Image (cartoon, rainbow, N blue to C red; front, side):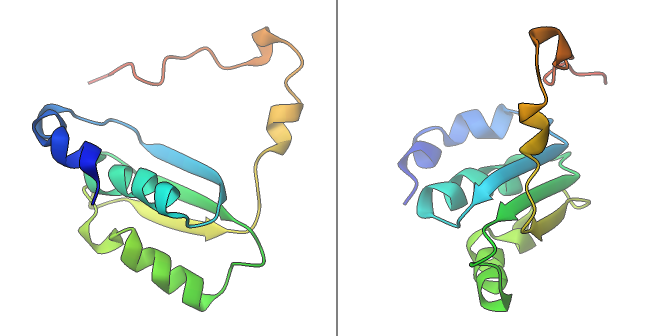
Length: 113
């Protein structure tokens, strides 16, 4: 059902996604969020950790089981990837940034291999 994925299938076979950590804030499991996250699950070959910050009212065994199926966690591209679902958020650090110089300026796409 993902038209973009089908249209650019050849691009994805040659694109090497080198993200090691992905954090999704305010994850609700909506169709668009699932497809976005699933893209990294199925294509990021060096992914080490993916964290989903879930609203507390949604967080239960049924929700987790449903997300594992929808995200196709069993078909992950990185054999070492770990997936974490939590009700906490890490937005606090965003509000502590007072000046542009406080931000990390390292290039996340720089390949060190």
